View 1 (cartoon, rainbow, N blue to C red):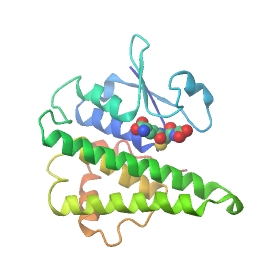
View 2 (view 1 turned 60 degrees about the vertical axis):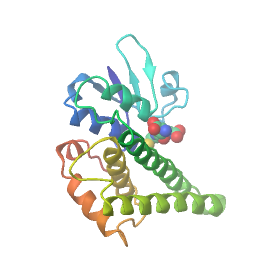
View 3 (view 1 turned 90 degrees about the vertical axis):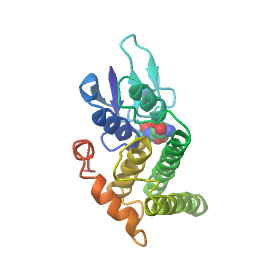
Length: 201
Ligand SMILES: N[C@@H](CCC(=O)N[C@@H](CS)C(=O)NCC(=O)O)C(=O)O
């Protein structure tokens, strides 16, 4: 299987971390694709986004939650819980983390635009989404619904998006969020996180 990814993409990293945690990392041949520079990716994924997974028979699957679900089904232990309510709670954390990532990518792109083209209203709306998601995660760590004793899809999705906040300096997310900061400190030491870390050069 070929996993098209970008080194700093948090969405692609979610899949890489999940595969690593399941011991399936070696199943993938990793291929870098740069969605904003390389339109050839569109032949695989019409949205021209990473990650995209190309199966042995040429079938292509995306987006990251679909790829994660496919990879999770390949072997035990399942990191997407099968039973409710654990399943819906984990998937809701994944959705909140992915949505925070979508908003963060827009914040980063908006900052790259010349000041005269800046859309302050759009920018602030995305930052409100980022901050509200971060507040949700802070509360979830504090009440134990995000755990450092397990590292399932919800935890993985949140961890990779927090790392992206740092890599792209999207927000000063640690301020006022002590539980989330301590949680991230702990989970980012996992081998799956360390070995998939990438920085902007
Ligand atoms: N919802 C998608 C989001 C993926 C995504 O936005 N990936 C970024 C890289 S971090 C990308 O490829 N962006 C290209 C674009 O937006 O045109 C998923 O979960 O896979």
